[in-house]
Image (cartoon, rainbow, N blue to C red; front, side, top):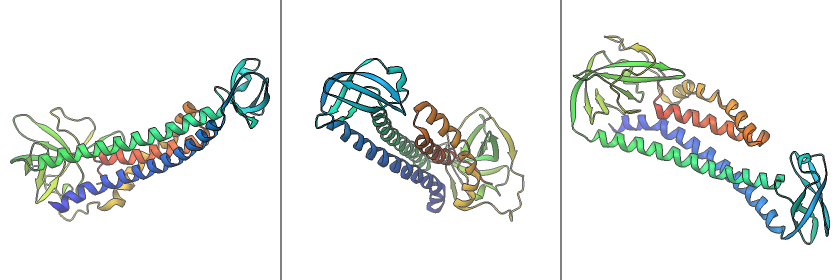
Length: 292
């Protein structure tokens, strides 16, 4: 049972680790950028009221009684001719900011990168921990013998293995892939523990979701009544990754959408694309994709 548990968890732990590494890198660089921007803002201790007199080359020219400065400001043409608050360095008035200028936007984006990365990492760890705890608790429950059929269902990009459980109320239990499923006769008797964990031929099949009493949607493929025992079942991380790579395909589009909403340009696109790609892999692992 220990070997089967390691097999069931290994891929999930791998994808979770990849997500955590990516989130840590994004959070680190975002924090460094935030710290630098905050240091610049902290040095601008003087305050005054000025006027935006012109806009060119991505910056506005601001004048106030004691100085003048060019301040980076996206779409600065809309504030030309308006009064504004100015924060500047008393030792060097040419270093200044005004509300809405690029430095404030970059600071907010950097802080958002930190909080978003931390939130994603916590969500991934929490979801995985809950799934493991539920499976372990069910595995320790008293078992009963039931007759099941192994079926594969394809819904969109996702292909999953299910156990169709016979009884007074027919149920369907999604399970994480194990090579034993490929040669599982249909039907066959298994030990079902806690209504969620199946044991067949000494191999423990852990649930990849909750059991349902309504036939799950998707294109169905049933196991043969007597599968060929010599059938070669996919094994290892490489086989799983080849199948789940399809979940990374939408990542660049997600990155473009995020960069457009956030206005963060190429850097935001790269960051969002990488996070979306690793989350796609993690989602496939959490849902129990089947590479067979």
